[in-house]
Amino acid sequence: MFFEKTNIEDRLSRWRDKVATEDNVLNEVYRILQKETEKEEAIANRLSKPSTSHANSFVFDRLDADKIYHIEQLKKICIDYRLRFLDSKYFKGKIPGTAIAKIKELEKQHETELKGFKIMAPSKLFKLEDKDDPLLFAPIGNDYYYLIHKWGNDLHPLRKLLVWPFKNIVNLTIVTLLVSYLITLLVPNGLFSKQNTAAEFWMMFFFMFKSIAAIVIFYGFALGKNFNPAIWNSKYFNA
Image (cartoon, rainbow, N blue to C red; front, side, top):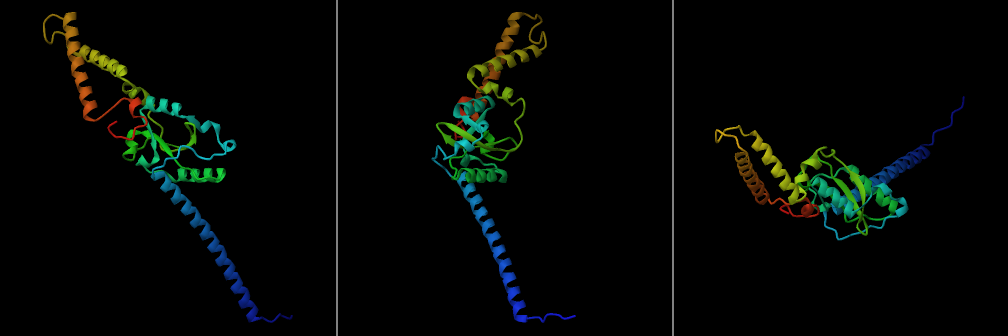
């Protein structure tokens, strides 16, 4: 059996070319990863910086119609559930990587750089991290917004009912009257006199109403609270 002689120079050349090819592949992978990292950092920077952009250059045929909302629709939900709709720079929670990835995907699909991000979330999420659900939007134009991503948990099922008193002064007054009436019913009969008369009941009710109303007014002024329609797009803590 005859074996071909080994050409050391040829083997050395092959090994050099193989190593060079592997290095090129590694360098290309590193370059791609570096480029993607730079994109993510640029998006995060845009999310945290102020922007005056009110529209983005979307390709409308590539948009999901179910994710397009008008400002009036967003306003109604914010008022009903006592949420805020503010620039993403005011958001103090952590924006997840999945949201960044969806922005990257949209920018690639529409061949544009998205700006003017908005977030819908409870007021406290614009001050500290919490477990409720923020929604990330980008402006389309003409007061329309595109929902990019939602993360976190859903709102409490009774939130709309719990914040109903804060929609306006009429609702708050109705709740104050109702609570005053219920507390008056809990007062034992004959606590202040031997005879239980209607006049005594209504006097007690009026006293309860004044007391509870005073607490509500003090709470509102002391903590700078306001009704839902006044805060839904306000960037001020004591709005």
